[in-house]
Amino acid sequence: DVKVTQSSRYLVKRTGEKVFLECVQDMDHENMFWYRQDPGLGLRLIYFSYDVKMKEKGDIPEGYSVSREKKERFSLILESASTNQTSMYLCASSLRRGQETQYFGPGTRLLVL
Amino acid sequence: AQSVTQPDIHITVSEGASLELRCNYSYGATPYLFWYVQSPGQGLQLLLKYFSGDTLVQGIKGFEAEFKRSQSSFNLRKPSVHWSDAAEYFCAVGAVFTGGGNKLTFGTGTQLKVEL
View 1 (cartoon, each protein chain N blue to C red):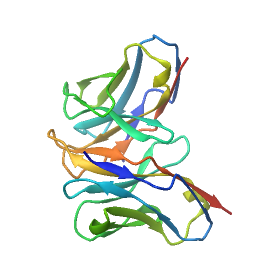
View 2 (view 1 turned 60 degrees about the vertical axis):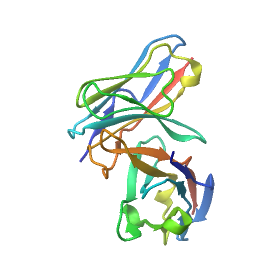
View 3 (view 1 turned 30 degrees about the vertical axis):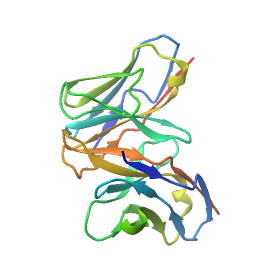
View 4 (view 1 turned 90 degrees about the vertical axis):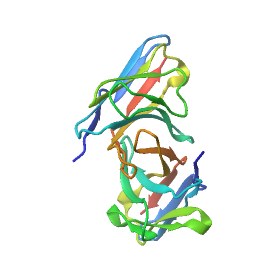
């Protein structure tokens, strides 16, 4: 089975803190994705990566950065957390082929105070 | 740019009744279409997907969906709903990006409540 894990299920941070969300997949997938999920808005793509050290902006990259130093690990970074970044963050991975399914982690619920 | 509309925010059905969740998409080429389900506090699980071929696709947990190009729709159906089907359902359209793979655009979701 594909396994995508996220470092924390719940996280509470203060405004201005630097926040790291970690995602690890064990299926040797080339592609990895970060989404945020908000009620009434569905899932929105923040960043994705199709190879080590490669990254592409999604639909809402402002206020976020990412890092992919190893194939299995994709980190989302909030350089200076703000209250409007309170959300559920979901990581996903897939093989690098056009028809491949994305597999999701359980999510990290982040609260910024 | 692609987009997905799920017109029903909430749906309530009785256990044993049939279910249809609506999904309309906008995409310039042949779409890759997906339905995912999210139980409370969980990540997303794939129910089914359409890439090409037979327009009626079967998924897990007794779900099916029909791709109708003329209506730009990909509605999800189940003939008899179980209480455990209560969850949020997301439709998504995939666009292939240059590096290879699908970039998904999701609808806003439909929350399903099942009455016993």
